[in-house]
Length: 119
Image (cartoon, rainbow, N blue to C red):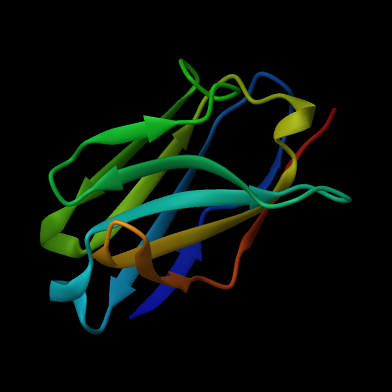
C-alpha cells in the first residue's frame, strides 16, 4: 500500500486547511485509515481515524474542529481542519492499516506533510 499526502502549508491562527491522502496498491486489505501528527519535540499522536465502515474517531484536542472523510471512488481520505491553532503545528502523516487480529495489525505510512499555524 502506498500513501501520498497533499495539502499542508502555512496558515494563520483560526484559518483552515484540507489535507488529502491518496492510497494505491493492495487496497482490498485495508481496514481503516487515518491521520497522525508529530510536533517538534513530541511523540507522534493520533489525530483522527475512519474505518472501512466509516466509523470515525478523533483526538480530544481536535474534536469539533477537524473532520475526517473518505472518498471510496477515488481511494482518498481527507482531513478538513478548521479553527487551526499554533499547537496544531506538526508534520501530519497519513496512515492505513490491515488488522489481522485484536492485537496484531500492519501499518502503512505516507511521507508526511508540514502544517504550520502562525501569524
